[in-house]
Image 1 (cartoon, rainbow, N blue to C red):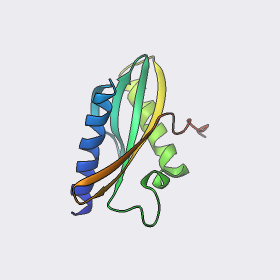
Image 2 (cartoon, one colour):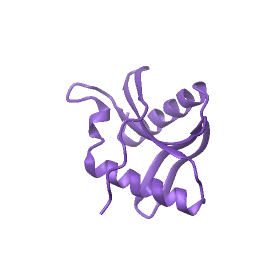
Image 3 (cartoon, rainbow, N blue to C red):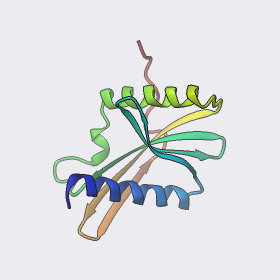
Image 4 (cartoon, rainbow, N blue to C red):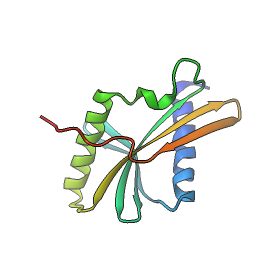
Length: 121
């Protein structure tokens, strides 16, 4: 499975997982200039920005470890832009869904409140 197909399959699994947990999916693959939010949803009184990381193996590292400080900054900037553009005043949460797809099996880990926004300069 190529990289893009794997990513799309992972995002589909993540959306279905979040729906099963009661999230109302607002948007997927939302773009702001060169930045992207994989999934935007409402969970109770929170707006949730979810980053999905999918790999075909966890041999080298778990997928969620690819969400480094630079990626976090980019997600936070995009989320801030989304909130301002849509004039949303809600509590914000940042989640990560880490998926390893091996053949037809998959292992999905949901990490709520995976990180807090750093102070942006």
